[in-house]
Image (tube, rainbow, N blue to C red; front, side):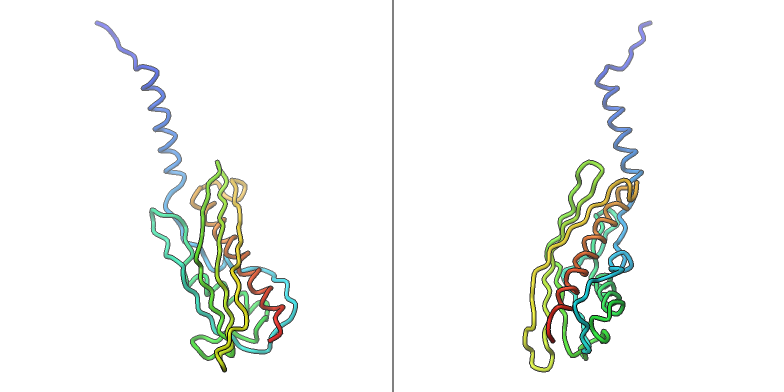
Length: 185
């Protein structure tokens, strides 16, 4: 009777399969971004405006269980509302269309890049501020931001991607509101 041992190629295939399985198990399902993770803790402000603002956010996407972490319109709008209320850049955020100004933010590009164990997210959003009384465009700008998350931030890949995505959104909100605070309204 002859005993056959698997070839070196079979050993390599088994090892690669084990690594892929472990990676999949460590990764888990995608987790959506949270408004808390996207809300800046401090914003450098040049001035505060004694006017109210209404918000409109578009271009976001819902996170699917087997996809990548995404930024939903609702979560981004909540983070933006919280940041405005915390920083007092406007006197208050008005739900609906009742504000003195309308701030529209459109997320139109988000690249989620993987470099080894590091995730980098690059985001670009169009910001527009209109005076409601006459419909005039007060300010508009495309704002780019990026953030990186490493295994030092989180071991699980899905968590690292969510943290990197939230960080890019947080930096985008910081930049946008900082620029609005410098306007003479």
